[in-house]
Length: 134
Image (cartoon, rainbow, N blue to C red; front, side, top):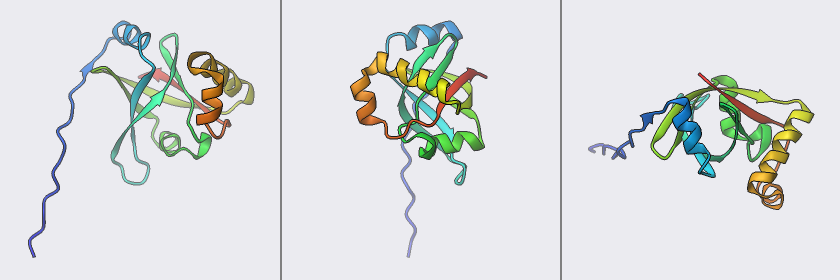
């Protein structure tokens, strides 16, 4: 029995972005893609997420809080790649666990995306993530 080769999808190439270029791009969009390394598989996993900029940093809110798989992956390997409209930048992820800090992130998400939508789509509000440029 002959084995079949899996067809691989061509990867889109992104351009490394300067901090200013990325900041300008992020000001005009509502969603980014993050790429994390799977904690068990070691594979690169690319996912769409909502965000809000905080200076040269980004804040993310995991949909299922500390149970979100990409959140659990960044605890093992904090290297994270952010891509937006063909631009790409490397960051280091730091979990935010302090209740008052997480509440601040939730409020900012509510202002950007609408508080009702955030409450409807997000299930657990125990953690957030701060991305710092690598």
